[in-house]
Image (cartoon, rainbow, N blue to C red; front, side):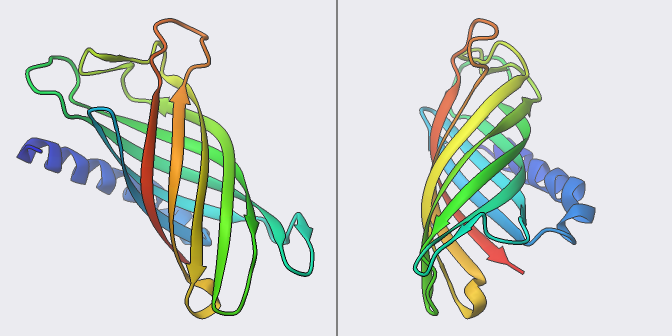
Length: 183
């Protein structure tokens, strides 16, 4: 990874922090993730708001609702390829969490569908997205732990594409490792 790519990633994260700063004070969770797709690094910063009560609650498990606002930086890793080396995305994704809470740790599974807006519609002239509006979905799993479940670590499989609204529609699918802190 070149110095310019690191600087661009840092700046994208700083902009994301700046955009979300006023909202983070109201968010119940902040998260960062890093992932990889074919020849693409993905970095993300997210703020998450929780529904005030569970959607479904049983003795051993529950389903909770959340809304995630995120800022992503997709960095192309192909050398000697023109076009934008890095593109940004902002998105909003409502998601459900199926969790099995306990005093020490709580395993969970997340499922979400939302929208994203890209800064550019191509990444390194190879990855073509067609239009800036992209639909995104993810499935993830992880573990909450610590006092009052304050910490979280997990993995996600995410996909973004324009649902064939406009061609070309290469889309992108990537895996990511995610850490989060719950206030």
